[in-house]
Amino acid sequence: MEPFHVHAATIPRRWPSALPVSTIGHVPDKREFIHRSFGTFNFSFILAGSGSVRVDGVDEPVQAPCVLRQWPGEDMHYGPQGSWRELFIIYPQTVAPALAACGFIDPRRSWWPVRDATRMHDALDSLLGLVRSPDWERAIDRIDRAVEQMILESLLGAEPVVADLADRAVQAIRAHLRAHPQQDHDLAALAQAHGLSPSALRRRWQRLYEVPPWRFVIDCRLRRAARQLVETTATVGSIASANGFIDQLYFARCFRRFTGQSPTVYRQRYR
Image (cartoon, rainbow, N blue to C red; front, side):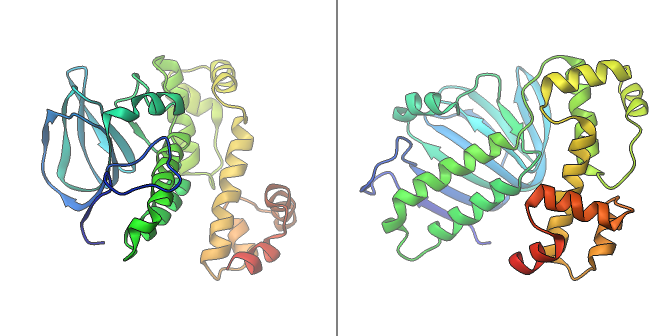
């Protein structure tokens, strides 16, 4: 995608949002490292690549997909390692109360990784379709809300903020399960590898997440299978096997419970 820069602060709104966006820009090959403060509220969506951001004097590595935020008056130090793809959103200072009311201002977060970026990318596609339209000014009310939706989905797809080292270990185990749902996992061994006892893993997982580990793995398998049903021509049986379901009938029952449809009907409906 080509770079673009859209300034929308002066465009009149017919149905004003509490969060009128000022500027939207896309930099597909950003190489500049930033050392400055801003007078605006900004969100930088890092869509590809990696780099670092300074938090409390320490440079933390960041990897796409993630979001960096910049608040007025804060000294910011961040940038790519080599280059990254960035979509940036700028709001005026006047929207501070609305950002706080939406929960978009969180002093604990200088940046956040988006672990589940599916819905954020859906919102991004919608936003880009509006911005790239020849008559984008007429769609400014939709653009305001599409930007808000994108920020919301990035936060919903992020891990909860935790400071406890043991809770971070639980997050790391959950990320491992999500990345490899098709495998058979020994939760006790995973817990010990991350410095936890099996009972501590169960207790802390239950406090952090509503869905227990075994159900989380099954749900990850089913989401992966749903994508493969739509995006590939592989047979239902091979998709079931590739996602850790040895019994195809059991897979079909789980899939129907998860989506409300059989795998075959789901494929026919969404392909």
